[in-house]
Image 1 (cartoon, rainbow, N blue to C red):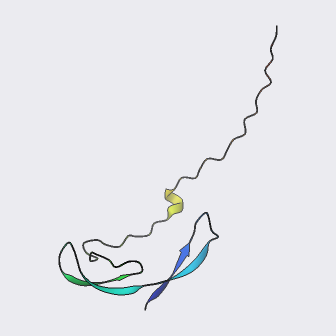
Image 2 (cartoon, helix red, strand yellow; image 1 turned 120 degrees about the horizontal axis):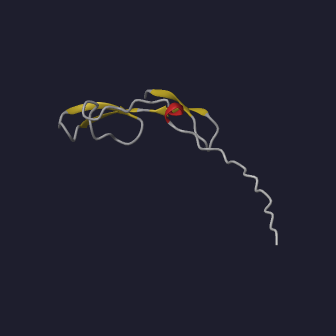
Image 3 (tube, one colour; image 1 turned 180 degrees about the horizontal axis):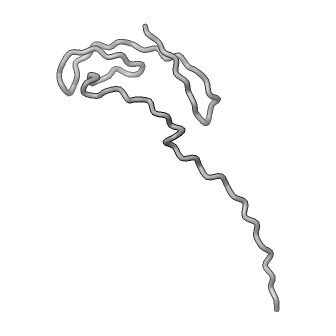
Length: 82
């Protein structure tokens, strides 16, 4: 069973590497009705790689905007004259 190393970067857990085990599935594509094989690590795929190509990984650090940092605003003392 082929495996691959994936670098996981999330905010709730510390960054680490995880091994994902993949399987080779033989299936009939629901769109083109052709028998095909497709490697997947999750649930059984429904479509072949020509009808639904795998997603390309993108660098999320460039695409995601960072959340603004909170700014402390000093309140000025209100002078009330009577």
